[in-house]
Structure formats: structure tokens, C-alpha cells
Image (cartoon, rainbow, N blue to C red; front, side, top):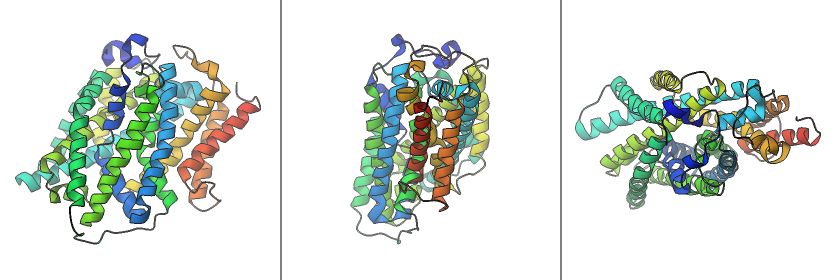
Length: 421
């Protein structure tokens, strides 16, 4: 697999046949993302919000929604060989794609910052507890960002290698965490429980993963067959992600605390905690930066991918030092509502409205603006937000699902009436 500088990671055209890889390698990358601090924290906070009785339903319900989106989007990526940003250009047109891709890139850099913030806090807490030394947050953030940026510059090959090597180790650590937690007898402190409904809990779970499912084509375009998308999405979203969230939620309930670092230290997972934090953050943020770079270079092909990677890495470091963790679940909720309609438009456009437009090997410039696609996206997000605030009734009681179904339905009707060209 070639590096970014030479082939630009196929940011403007389909991945050729000789660059495709086996399904298990792509599935390893997708599953590796599950073993990261945001996944542990999302599982803990959502289970605490909905309560023990509804925790499993919220986790599995959210996982099912994301699995279906990831499968369909991943299949489109494998069929076409296009990354998610080229698919957005086909579905929304050049002008519309710049709006969508810019929003995606900002969101991915926000995730980049959140993960760096979590990484810095976790390393500081672990180092103080295990070694009695607190490393400077700025130093930790900069070193982590350098490793991530270099990995991203090398490209998918480096991300895939790290994922393949670390998946068995992280799965073993997570299993050890579960076994140790369930062997405890009683919670030390009563776990807090919020007022979150099951629908809001599912939306928060969806929000914690939704960007990954929508940009699934960024990695499934390397698949040799579209059938590998089912394996990739199923392994990641129906096995790895729910397992990690359930492990975190179970440990939090047993120990009566929502602090994942305290949980790992209490259960004696010092070295294991370091492995999860470093490896998980490394791969997850490399993918975040990788996809953000693809979005910018697909929208502005004249820009150097290497320079874009460095600039976005610096912006990500800045975001990481801004401590944007305070409204984590709220961030996830609105993330799901705003971005999930994009998947609805692309799926309908590819499979129903304009399947012929996706048969090319390269996306030509001057794609016309698809006003109906943009309108469906805006309406889907607006209706879901209005329903979540109680202004109108919710069809499914899950805002994220309302958003996607509304966008898909509106766009499907426009296509049926012959308004989509």
C-alpha cells in the first residue's frame, strides 16, 4: 500500500483492484476503534443515565442502528472503491459536498481533541498512581499527536498494521477487566442514575459511533468484495463495540464509580490500562485525522495531503488542550442527529435514485448541486431536533433514527417524483 505523498491515499479516485486487501484486515481496523476510552466512557455514562435495567437495551439498540448504517455505507464503499467524501460529492454535488465535508472534518477534529484530552488525563492519572509522577499535559499531548500524525501520513497500511497486532491484546485486557469486575461482591459507592430515556440512551450510543459508520467507506473501499462490509460492520458494531460498552458499564455498576481510570486501577489493570489507552487512542485518532484529511483533499484536490495532515494535526492538538469533555453525552446526542441524515441520503441515492452515477472509477469535477439532497439532510436533522425537544411527536422515540428515516423518506419521494437529476 502506498503512502499519502505518492498516491494521496486514493482521495480523488477509486481504490484499484491491486490495492485491495482481505476482509479480516479491514474488520480489524474497524474493531480496533472499539477499544478506546470514548467507547468505555459512552457505555458507562449511558448505562448510568438509563439505569441498570435498560442499559443492555440501550447499548444493543444503538449498536443495531449503527450496524445497519455501517453495513450499507460500507457496502457502497466496497462496491465503488470511493471514500466517504467522494460519495458525498456524488450525492450532494461539489458545492453541497463542501458544506457536508467541512462539517465532517470539524466534527472529526473535535473527536481528535476529545481523545487527546482523555489520553492526557488518563496518562496523568495512571502515572501518578503507579509511578508517583505526573507528566506535563502539554508534553503528553504533543508526543501523542506526533505519533498519530506520522501514522496518518504513512496511511492506511500503518493503521492496519497496528490494529492487526493490537486487537488480540486489547480483547484479552477487556475480558480480564470483565472477569475481575464480576468477581467483586458489592459496590463501594452507589452508582448515580440520571433521567435519560431509553430513546435518548440509544441516540447517545448512536452518537458515539455514528461518524465512524458514515465514513465506513474510507476503509471498506479497500475490500476485495462488497460482502466484506457485512463482516466489517458486524464484527465492529455488533460484537466489539457492545462488548466494550457492556464491560465498562458492568464494572462501573459493580464498583459504584463512573471514572474509568479509577475502575481500571481498582481492578489492578495498571499495565492493561496503559495498553488500552495508548493503543486505542493511537488508532482511533489516526483514523479521525486520516478521514479528516481525506475530506479536505477530496474537496480541495490541489492541496498537499502531507501539509493538510500536519495542519489538521496542529488544530487537533489545540482542540485537545481546550478541555471539551464537560458535555460529552450532549455532544454525542447532537452529533448523531446532525450527521446521520447524510447516510440516509447517500444510501437512497446509491441504491434507488441514481445507481448509475456510482459506476465510474473517478468522480469528475463540477458535480452539480443536489438541492434535494441538502434539503433532505436539513429537514431530517431539524425534525429530529424538534422531536427531541418535545415540539413535535417522535416516530421512533430515537432522535437519530428519526433523522435518518426522515431524510431517506424525503429524498426517496423527491427521487420518485423525478425531481432528482
